[in-house]
Structures are given as structure tokens and as C-alpha cells.
Image (cartoon, rainbow, N blue to C red; front, side):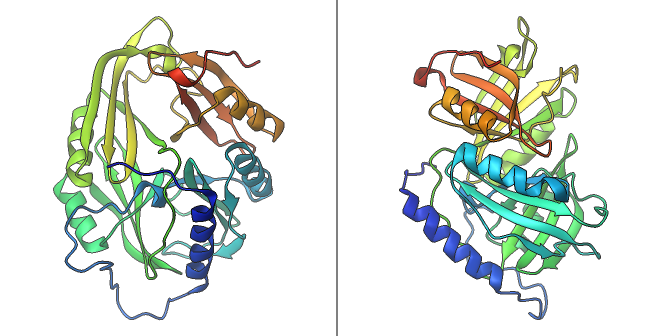
Length: 318
């Protein structure tokens, strides 16, 4: 699926519409009505602009993280709110961050985080929760948190072979966000034992396809220069996914990142990150098709950032 680049006005429109949706606290709706588009049967995904990385930080780090991330990638944070977004008693400060390269849901819990929340990597918007849950189970996932209401919709958490957890969500009022400038990678690390099972299941669920399966990819991109590893890339209506199949012998910080963000100018983006409180943990490394680096933002969140190899030459960050 191809997405056209749109101007910043589409992002602003998305923010306004989403904030309107956030104001609709529809907890009084009867029953778990989960059908967003009756008769729609083209798969569970809505689009990659609706799929958010879940970030957990301490309350004291929330403002610094949000400010740094937005300064690095552009875009706009939502207003901060305090809510219970879980099926059990809890309280968290919460903000969305919309950027041209991906969306984040940021949680700063004021109470202990109930299990298994905090382990899910991403939130994927689905067209129909009932059908998505059925499809996930049929594809080999288990539902580790059954569907529950939050203030603006319905959520569930599923787990794939290899232990990969993700949240599915559906809103009472459908959000409308503009397309992203670039589609981020959901970066998944799995073992040799479960790699094929994970890929088979996720592709079936998402109705995606494997676009490359390289058994001898350059392992320098996961901190092991001079070696090779298996790297699988998947595309679907949920966006991009990069699966790293490893023996688990990973130097820090590799394996801690959840998302990889594509930017046009890696050097300039790293400078923005550093000037806004971020730290470059792994200097830019060039493979055959991209140059990538690892960055830690205030609060400890780690992200991979890359640009296409043809966009810029290799540089080295201090």
C-alpha cells in the first residue's frame, strides 16, 4: 500500500479532530459495541498513521521527553491529560505525539503499572475489534488482555510466538489523521526458534507480505560489525516491520528500541536530538541501503533513526 505525502495542514487537522475525540468520554455506552465499519472485510488495519509506539516514562520525565522528541522530529504533542486507561484501577499522565515520521502514546503512571501493561510495544488501530481478535487467534496469537473499555474506545493486548506483545484499539469516534511523510519500522527481535512462527502468524493476521528475507544481512546494524544475521522486512496496512532474528547476544542498546524512524537527513536529526536532551548511543552505521543510529531520549526511551543510503553519506556522531 502506498501513501502520498501531504502538507503540515493535514497533521494539524488530525490533531484537532483527535482532541475532539478525546473530549468524548463515552464510558456510558452500553455493551462492547466494536464495529467501526460494518461489512468491511479487507483486513484489520486502518493505516500506519494510526499505529502508535507505546512509551512509558516516569512522571518527572514526561515533559522533557515530549519536548525532546517533538523537537527532533517535528509535529505536535496533544494536551496532557490524567486518566485511567486500563481495565483495573490506575492513574497515568498521558500525551499523544503526532510527528511526520510516526505517532507515540506516552504514559507516565502515577500508580504502579498493572501487569502486563508496559510490555506491549505498540497500539494498532483496527477496523473491528471482534474480527481483529478472531483473526489474531486464528493466526496463532493469544489474547493476554481481553477487550476492555477505556475513556474513548476499546482495547485488548495480544501476544505472538516469540513473546511479542502489542495492543489493539478501536475508538467510539473514528480518528482521522493525515498520512505520514515516512513510515516507521516496528522493530521486533525474535529467536531462531520462533522467527518463522512469528512471521507466518503476523503476515496472516495483518494480510501483509514479506518484502525481503535476508539470511546474511550486515549485523553491524545491530551492533555486531563483521558478522551476519537474518533480517526480515514486512509491509502491511499497519505499516512496516523489521524482524531481527538473533541468538540474543546483543550489545547495548540493541534490542531495547521498539521503533525505527526514517528521516531525510540523519546528521541534522541527530543534532536536533542532542540539542534537545537526547544522547547518541550508537554512531551512524552504513549498510547497503541505509545509515542508522541509536538515540536515547530524556526518560530513557531508545529509538533507532535512519535515512536511506542514497540520501546522505556516513557521518560519525561523538
